[in-house]
Length: 431
Image 1 (spheres, helix red, strand yellow):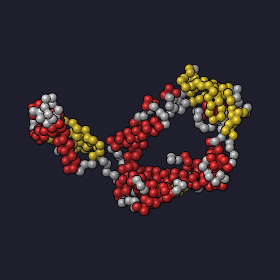
Image 2 (spheres, rainbow, N blue to C red):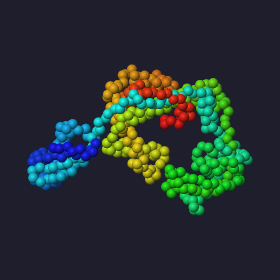
Image 3 (cartoon, one colour):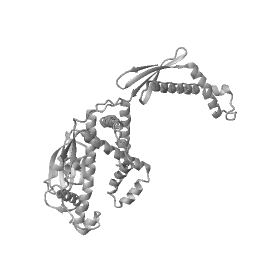
Image 4 (cartoon, rainbow, N blue to C red):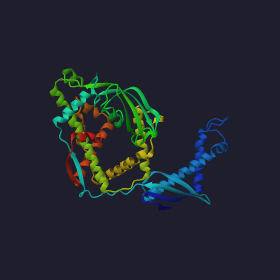
């Protein structure tokens, strides 16, 4: 047996299997098949040996060979202490003489070496909510429940407009570029930015030719990066009318007290919880990115490939839940390659970081994690009782606790730098 290093992570091993051992194993396989064989004219298990050999001989030999192949390969991995990733590719290189000669090519786990964090600056975002942030949220809630009244005034942001339009690229109409009595609200991004900008300032009964540039990432392949001319006719302009902060309105959005003081208090509490959650996630991402930057690591392509397929499956299921049909879902490996590689890299680094620093979560720490989540519910006691009834939920809480301890330890080892960010910037962070 020999081990050949093909690249940093790829290995090739060559090993022999005695044909006599394979042949001896065939008898045992045939006895097993004989018990199950259904041969016309014979009861199960009573078929003549020569008939069983004729029916199952090839299969028995193949099974015996595969059994020896896998056994020899596992023995080799143990002997050479190889941590294999994925399944090897086996090739029969010779079958002459008394032995089969096989070659197996595979990837191994990389040696993970954690870098020095002491000189690494890591930003830790902070945010202080203001009364203005609360008022902006109230405005959003009012706009979500706004009504519209028909007006003779020019269209502006927030107005609901109804239009006819006809689009052409290079003088030719295209699919989806024409509609009549099409309603949308200006400023909500329902239409392309150039289209909406062209409608602003128009009154009912007015028309305009508008140049619209389709983004390079547009979903329709034939329109990506193209420029179209849309002839837009405004049929109706309806001005936005926001609801007053009445008792009925406040109760309708779930604030039982029905007054403005309770509304602002509940909104501020909810915003604070959401801000803390997003800041926590951003701090984690910054910490892990710092760990990755000081710990260069080449990851096995096999692991990246598996992660890509996992991400693709999740994305496909999410798109189906949003109403997409199978023929509308066109996902490729390239779409997920970067994120998959990053995920595998961080997973290996964090596993090593946990191991080296002997990080674990005590029962009390896990309980504290769940108690923090319970504060978001109307009855925290019921939530706690429900949560601890399921082992999988408890394991999730344990993983969250360890994740936070990893984040905290990275910040303690690195040069933590607090940076103040606005509420708007926090809400633009990935949730």
